[in-house]
Image (tube, rainbow over all chains, first blue to last red; front, side, top):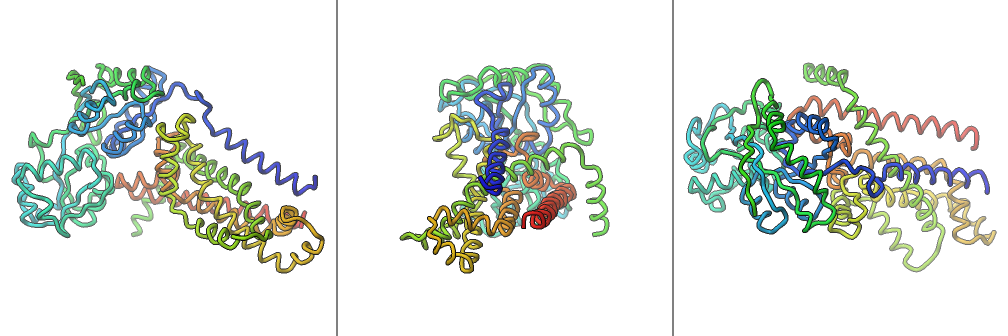
Length: 281
Length: 231
C-alpha cells in the first residue's frame, strides 16, 4: 500500500471511530429521559433551575426539547418523548382522549399578560381582556401573533373569540403572524412597537423590551395552567415509563413544587405550584 | 454603539465552561460530519470526473444542485426517518449528537463530491491523456487523480466544514437543542436571540467565528507543512 493510500485509510478510520464515539449504544444512557416541553418553560430558565435539583435526588438526567405545545404533543405522539409538560388544556385533553397518555397532572400555573407600547395607541391599559381585544381589533394597532399552534397562540385565539372579534374578517397588515416561539415573537413586537399576548415567565426573563410594558393583567381568563403527562407505554413502546413517572412524581411532590416556587427572576416568582388536581382519561 | 460593543466584550470575557463545552460539541459534530463527507464524497466526485457512462452529465448536474440542499429540509427528512415511528426509529438516534452528525454529513457529502468532481475534471485536462494512454481503469484513474490534486481538496473540506458548523436548520430539528447534550453554537445563538439577550448572542457569534478562523488557520499551516514535506 502506498503511503498516500495508507494515510487516507487512517483518516477514514479515524473519522468512523470518532463518529462511533458519539453514537449511543442501545442503552448507553439508561438514566436519561426526554421531556418535550414548551418554549416558555425553557426560555424563562425554569428547567435550568429545577432539573439539577431533580438530578441530585434521582440520578436521572432530563433532556428537554423545547417546542410549541402543538409540536411537543406531536413529538410525543410519534414516540419521540417520554414525558410532555405543556400548557394548552383543550389540546392536552385531546391527547388524553386519543389514549396517548393515561393521566394528566396539574403542575403549576402562571398567567398571560397583554404587552404593548407604553404609549398605548389602542387605549387598552387596565381594561379587561374582552374589552382590550375588541379595542385592539377596532384600532387596528400593530399586533404580533405567535401563529404556531402553541399554548399561547391558543390563548390569544380564545381571547379574540371572547371579545366577539371575528379574526378572519378583520385581520389585515396590522396583524403580524410570525409563526415563531415566544422569544422571537417578543423580539418582533419590540421592533415593531406592537401589542402581543405573552406568558409572564418569558416576559420577565426577556431582555430586549424596548418600550414595551404590561398593559393588561390579572383577568381570570388569562390564567395559564401547565399540565404534565407520561406518554402511554402501551401506545408507544420504548417509553421510559418508570423514570418518566419518577420525574412526574417529583414535580408534583412537595419537594418539586417547592423547587418551582423557588424559581425567581429579579425577586419575582414566575410559576406557581398547583399540584393536587389529577385528571384521568 | 460603543456601549453595545463594550457590553459584548465584557460578555465575551465572562463566558464560562458551558460555552467551551458547546463550542467543543459543535467542533466535534462538524469535523466528524466533514470526515464522513470526505470518505464518501471524494471517491464519488473523482469517479464522476474520470468515468464515462451514459447519464454522467445528469449525475454531475444533480450533484451540483445538491450543494444547495436546504438544511431545514434535510433536518425534517432525517427527523421523520429517525423518529421512533420512522424506519430507523429503533436505533434511538433522534435528539442525539449522532443524529446531528448524520444531518451535517448529508449536507457535506454532495458539496465535497461536487467540488472534487470539478477539481479533478480541471486537473484531468492536463494529466488525463497520459493516464488514459496507460490503459488504467476508471477507479484506478480516480485514485491517481485524487493523489494528484490532494492539496486542492483541502479547500473542498474547508468549504464543507464552513457549511456544517454554521448551519442551524438541520441540527435544531434532529438535535432538539438539548441543554448540555445537543446544544451547538448556532442553536445557542438562536436561543439567546429568542430570549432577547442580544449581547450574549453576539458574543457567542464571535466565538463561533473565532472557531471557524482557528480551524482554517490550522488547516492552512498543516497544508503548507505537508506541501513542503510531501509535495
